[in-house]
Image (cartoon, rainbow, N blue to C red; front, side, top):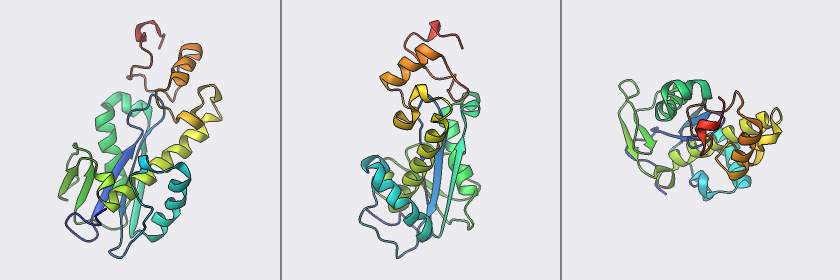
Length: 197
């Protein structure tokens, strides 16, 4: 995995939860130092939950700057999930306590962040360390949020499915209806028209 795309102190950004039926879309932005090295670091989707949790304090402790932001279902429904994902990335970058000279983004869609140049990189979370680090923070912070709201609505089992469209989650929506944490603009059930929103 490469360290930098162009510049030292560049920012990597990624999101988690884009395909979920409930909960926020969460993004992180990370600036790693030039001497950062960790053999465990990889795309968060390729790591176990245990390894993501091991890496989280390492990334937070050794990064030059990091930021994490949630965009919640009401806003997702207003502006759509793509725009919400980009907004979450922008808000995560807003939290950095230094201005990056360059931004690299996981995926193929982004909107300019001020005058800072950027590049979109498909599967960037498996190619560049700062995007991988951002993917881990986005995933761990979002998972923690879903585990917290699981306590309020345990019937959806968000502590396990994290809001993704599993058969169990959809069965619970069919039985119990939707909550304030569900994304009403998403196809929550195959028979969407029969669900009273």
